[in-house]
Length: 356
Image 1 (cartoon, rainbow, N blue to C red):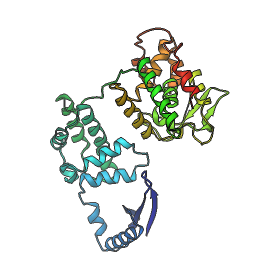
Image 2 (image 1 turned 30 degrees about the vertical axis):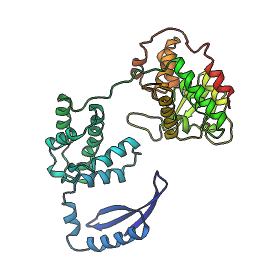
Image 3 (image 1 turned 60 degrees about the horizontal axis):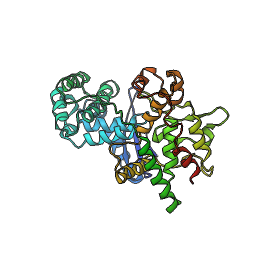
Image 4 (image 1 turned 120 degrees about the vertical axis):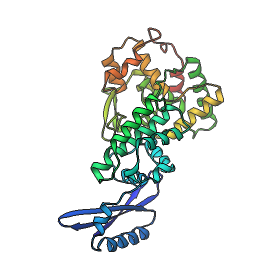
């Protein structure tokens, strides 16, 4: 018996997942494939039902040795947890390399190391490839009986680290100066005057700085998530090393962040009804135009957290704003450069709030 389920993709298109289920000797065997058109899904489903109905067909399929690409496809399709955009891009990219066409049972640590060496990226980026690939190796054998050897993957990572092929990501400590922030706010305020329909990036920047929120979190906070009386907002699906979906967290708001929120019109469900990609693109273009070197939007979060420590806040107080569950993660921010609040007499906040 087969079913077809329509699923909306992130790009807005619709995919049709066909699922074939066959009962044999009290056990259920199933296969899934996704198509762009429902007729194609239906045709595949009928074809596979006929093929699997033949004597010995299921036993033959179970003992088959799929390629790594097939394992990646199945992982992507069946994962209940949402796969992040970066991880999805990495897994798609891996399928373009020769290792993707190798049967699972024959992949050894040397094959994985050769693949990692073929990447031309920095060791930190290569490390991300290894990490995402390791997720496939960890579940393929126990979940699907695909003969990917997790020990080969672990051995490859050990060698790659010792040889410098992969490394951990370098922690950024770039912080914007008041002069750089003044330039950015002036640029976006002037743009808004000339093009009223343009995104109010000056408000987005001010809120991100004083709330310490990531760009995706900024765009997801709704008016229903804002409790002015308690001076807090609900951040939905907050980033977490192991859990993201359903990780809804209440965080406290600074006085400045509240002022920015109160300056926003309440004509949409979200306080900042914009896309994270658009925020990043606007910020990057402006920095390039203004000659501001090596500044990322995410650096505003680092600046906002560092500011709270410089003001004398303790770790629990800062964590209530930043949303960090592990206080250990906040230790990198405690090496403060100065004491006091350098934004106390900064006119940029008032300018951002008063501007449309």
